[in-house]
Length: 326
Image 1 (cartoon, rainbow, N blue to C red):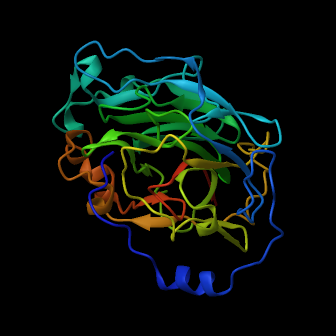
Image 2 (cartoon, rainbow, N blue to C red):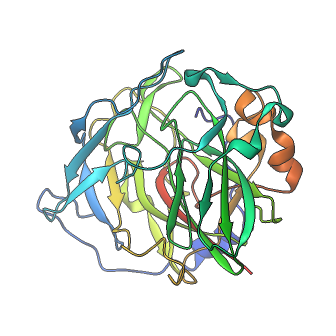
């Protein structure tokens, strides 16, 4: 999504910056010696593995590629992230132009026809309403409920149904997709390398909504042009002082990657050390002109839900979200 307004830096973020946790510099084989942190550094464009994993039948979509890139220590990373788009069950669309689904309101949606995923046979039937920029994968107690039907654009919104007993865990992988693989950027706003922004909002019929009680951890940040702008404080992977400006010369940008725990989606995974999710307004995410959101706004902000992401909605491209429903 285009950046519509600068993200406000909170007072708490300023306090965290002043308490910067010093780390030992890491010097890589290709001369990257200005990074202090726990991530792995890559530089430049990734190798394309799949040129396009999505076809838009009734409109235009950005190219949705998948690539891989090797870091300074020889480890190979998938960009923008490993995902289950090809094999996962697709969420039912509330609004999806490529499929010709353009409901004007929730009243036009046959909610009873949405497949019911059984997590707990004796559980409560719960309906979820989801808008993601750009892509999500939803797990309940470690069970993959659905993946987004559109990885990149045009923007869509989704509905899911599952049966679960409280307490249960919600785990979501969100990806802000990229045209320039490995560089976290796209051809946009007159620049060949312009960082996009993310955003995720959801509400559920049992009263659960996205808010700052959720946890959000970053696992891929790019583009970075000055590695000294990155900081880590109390588990927060911070990039607030890094540039978010577009450029026509971004092929040498850096990216930072962190290994995703294999059991991150499981019910008993402990995410308490992860940062709290950061909140964003509808204006900051830029949804006021998106029918996929506005036609169902009563199920999103109207239900008390907020847009959430990690601490940087522009540069953090792969983020994991967790919430425990009591």
